[in-house]
Image 1: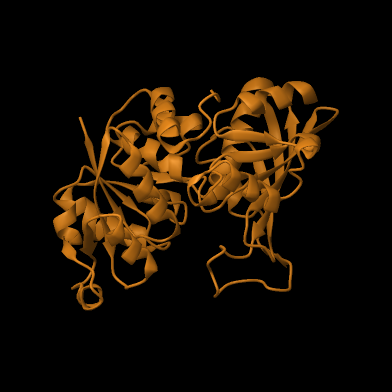
Image 2 (image 1 turned 60 degrees about the horizontal axis):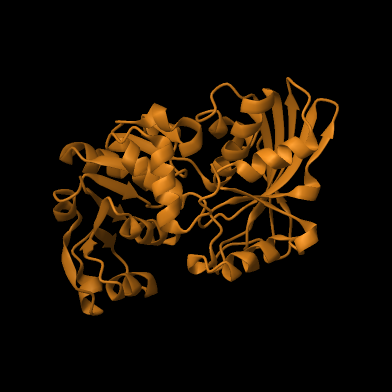
Length: 339
């Protein structure tokens, strides 16, 4: 069965998810939505994607965009909608669009967890989400934390986690946000990331803090896990090397910063120079007593893309999470040796 998919929104995540859907052998990208005319929607037309308007489509038509219909027309043709609208808009769309039209939907981490029946990170809780009508793919940071913490918890058991998110100030294209010359702490304890992790890893106790810095490339996490069993550095390195959608990088190959990780992604030939894997620095993995410490980097524009693809399959009742991840990673060129 071919899964018919629509993507609402064609911004940072939407355009990547649309391209990813288009690469899956078992999916058909029926169309994407647009409202404002910009380079993104123009590129969607250049790729041959059908474009549906969320309003009357006047601005799109005035600028030479062929409009295939309205979002209501798109909803009649799809099995699943991936909603990548700005935060809070997804919850409104659920009530206005998806429930009345009886269409399954995948939401993003900007929405509150109550928008969906379950939050989702494929390698952590795929089975929990099979057959659900509404699934929320958690944020880039929560995805990054969940991927690595899940492996630590399986091997050693976690008593408690303390983590700090060092967040990029804006995406590379974004000229409206910052900071430009400041370090801005999140004056909220815990930051929202810890409670969000618990929507996926329900039994992990975690406390998080966060701050924003003058960078556009990636987020960095510093993580301290108090484990139930004593961890071993070499063993942890081996675990992370085998973990799907996690990549161990090291000083020996001169990958010492987020800038070099993004350059590595380009040299690997990844689409848009994205790095969908969570990158853990080998030399920054340490053990003190029962505490495991490590530092990882998260590419905020792309690590949730593969998650959206797996969430689509889960929503439509595809039960084999491991197989779904294999199919997704093969299609997207993510290192297939990781399992």
